[in-house]
Amino acid sequence: MTMIRCVSPVDGEVYAERPAMPLEMARQAVAHARLAQKAWARRPLDERVKLVLAGVARLNEMVDEVVPELAWQMGRPVRYGGEFKGFNERSNYVASIAADALKPLVVEESDRFERRIAREPHGVVFVIAPWNYPYMTAINTVAPALMAGNTVILKHASQTILVGERMVRAFIEAGVPADVFQNLFLDHDTTAALIAAKSFDFINFTGSVEGGRSIERAAAGTFTGLGLELGGKDPGYVMEDADLDAAVDTLMDGATYNSGQCCCGIERIYVHESLYDAFVEKSVAWVSNYKLGNPLDPETTLGPMANKRFAATVRNQVADAISKGARALIDPKLFPQDDGGAYLAPQVLVDVDHSMEFMREETFGPAVGIMKVKSDAEAIELMNDSRYGLTTSLWTKDAERAARIGRDLETGTVFMNRADYLDPALCWTGVKETGRGGSLSVLGFHNLTRPKSYHLKKVTA
Image (cartoon, rainbow, N blue to C red; front, side):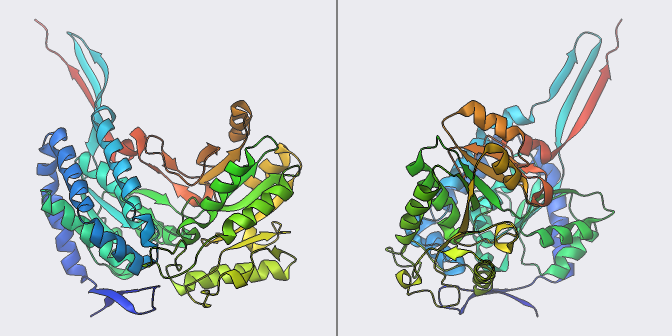
């Protein structure tokens, strides 16, 4: 029997394991979800919304278990309290817009015709969630999918193997029917076989570019709808009129929070030459204040990376950049807990350029490169010089300038004086190899449903 294991970054030991579900058993679970879907969709919308929110509330009651469990699985320090703030904000927002997002578009309502476009649930939605923010990334799709009348099959990454199990337990205890929301432990082969067999009506995947390609290959020819949020190499641009301290605080936090393991984390920064030296000096001081250590210690502000393999990628990129002329500015003596494994010191690099893998490929760790620029045109060219496009963070006091620059950026979201945040009222989407589709907002509901047109000609006397 194949076992799916979570090796904890805290101590390198197996923290949890579950047997992978055999293919035939997985098929049966999906069949149960399909049978349950019509009855679930026939329930009034406000009832579905209330049940989803009850599941969210039940999970909140488990906070004392969830937070240390996350620390053991993927290394986030307990001092940050898990993911409840964003989890609740997103759930509450989609609940507040569900009725408007799903209401029919009425084209004509007269004595001769009724013409409207309704929103129909896809059916069975498959959510494949990542380990870096396993609750928040999952709820982005789970909450609106269930509210819209779909049933949901949830699969989490092995690194956070207990998250889906706990989410489903909370929702079922709150009253969501067991066949409507299920967590499955699946290996890659079984997952691919289910997708190829057109088991699902919509699939949402958050993960690596290669993972996205695997999903597309498995789904080829099935015409299954896909939502893919893949890699990122998000830039920040600090203009000459920026609030320097605010820019340093937000961008350094965006580069290093959660050990840099954020989909929209800041991985490269371009600073106008007039502020460059001051920005670098303040950034080094900011990052140097971290305390790297055991995430279960309330004093720890930077935990280990989720897996020593991920830390090795960061180290290799940094070493390659240094070999090509980059300079590392964070003194390693400040972080004696860096053990060469999952525990990794943060780093700030200068004298970097786009010939270096560190400035081109996703790092997904607590390391960031800073480059000097002379103009908006130069910054735009550099920000667009990437195969990814999730978010971009612009720092200026001039909103018109930010909007003008934003029009030329190849990105899913343009931030001004903000970074590393997901606004549930806006569509979370990307371009280029970051993927396709979009979650949250009204558009997120539209992606989890299909349009169905009604053209009703009334009989007149």
